[in-house]
Amino acid sequence: MGAHTGSEHGKSNKGPAPQKIRLKVRRQDGPDSPPYWQEFSVPYQPGHNVLSVLMELRKDPVDVTGKRVEPIVWEASCLEQVCGACSMIVNGKVRQGCTALVDDLEQPIVLEPMDKFPIIRDLAVDRSRMFENLKRIKGWIEIDGSHDLGPGPRQDPAESLVRYSLSTCMTCGVCLQVCPQYGPQSKFVGAQVLSQVRLFNSHPTGSFDANERLDAVMGEGGVEDCGNSQNCVKACPKNIPLTESIAKIGRDASVRGFKKFFGL
Image (cartoon, rainbow, N blue to C red):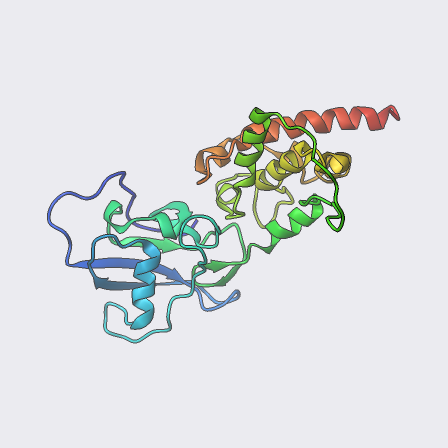
């Protein structure tokens, strides 16, 4: 994680409202360009979040010295913590820019890209490795919906609630950013993928491909590479029980390995 100043407060700063919102942004013009810092300010308005401040800057991209610069690049889609695209480091903590409220942040607000993923430009990073890993574990349900299949199997309500929680994963990358085992030089797939294996293997139809998914996360880079730091479950913005998923897949993988060894 790059150098930064400032910290996050749980509540709004006391005292009169500031006249300006001050930003310090770690920028990078391209994947192979050196990083650098720029500072900005916009007029204060209540209710701003980090993304709305960046949107204001985009209208007139001028730094604090009055120099006109290229607009800051970032990603966003839903603006309500569903898409996961706006993940970034805000005052030293990885989170979504859409839910980082200015009134709750110490200024200057320091913005940095996640450093566990390749930089595209400025605050935008390449999360394609996460989606490739979903392909690796067959993160979908294979079913032909072209004809009437009749009523589906009965499902336990408690298990359905667990699956719903797992399904809220937005592939934001936060759990991987805080994971000591995950990084550019590591093959570890991370908590996000392992939790999705649990989700699809617990589905009545998805369970038909359970062994194939388990095989995909056994061995190098798989569930055995987890160091059990539990940073992922603490950082997950959707409160997904990631460590429970890792433990469940670890047990299932052990049983699968035992059966394969003895030809069962």
